[in-house]
Structures are given as C-alpha cells and as structure tokens.
Image (cartoon, rainbow, N blue to C red; front, side, top):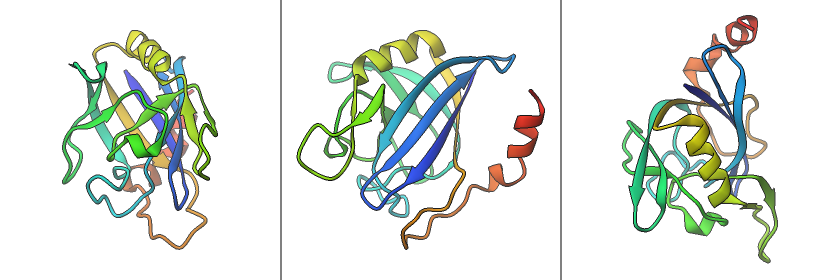
Length: 161
C-alpha cells in the first residue's frame, strides 16, 4: 500500500493533501493533514523532512489506534494521531476531514480527526509506505530542501496510469 502526501508550507504550519492508492493505482482513501511548519527538522517544533517512510499501526492509551511513521532522520515517535491544533503536536501529523478555524489564532485547525484516522486505519491496514513531497516552493523566506526522490519521479508516476 502506498500513500502520497503533498505539502504546502506556511510560516506557522504545514498543510497537506493525503491520498492512498492500491496496487492498481485506484484511490482508496483521501484526507487532509495538519503539521508544524518546516524548521530544519528540529525536534518538537518542525514537521519531518520530505522523503519515503514506512508507517505501522500502533496503539496507546492516550491515542488508541494510530500510526507511527518510522525511520525519520534524527527523530523518533513521529505519529499520525487525532487532534485539532498545531499546539497539540510536537512534530507529528494530524489527519482530518478538512481545515477550519476553531480558535482565535491565525493558524488553520483540522476537524474530524478521530473519525478520519479510524477510516484511514480501516482503508490502509496495519502498514503502508508514505511518500512526502511538495510541488511548490514555500512563499516565505525559510529554506526548504526539495525532495531528491521526487525530482525525477513525478512524471513517471503520472505516466504509469
């Protein structure tokens, strides 16, 4: 199982569209993802680098069933778990139905995260491979390293359909 996360970077947060496909390239699941902004992969204040990651199901008392993104350079316990605000994450990802402003700050929030994560777990199963990239450079002065994987692969992904 493969999932593609396409990011848009902002100074205060990162928003993504997440699409999972089966072996025949049929879309089996889609959602939005809210993350922290890119801050050079610093622990607890940055989203993780673009790249390819194995993801496995995990269970804890705090988050119940959720996913663990493995093999993140210089990071550990990066999770996909429920929550609504960037203040509830320390480098993890919040999958949800859509972005919406819930509180009084300027950062978009995300809604329906528990139900979205439950649907995600049913659709993707116990493990999948996550491909994270962005198609555009950020519209702010932070330096974000483009994904080396995607540089030559975007055309071939579209051509295989």
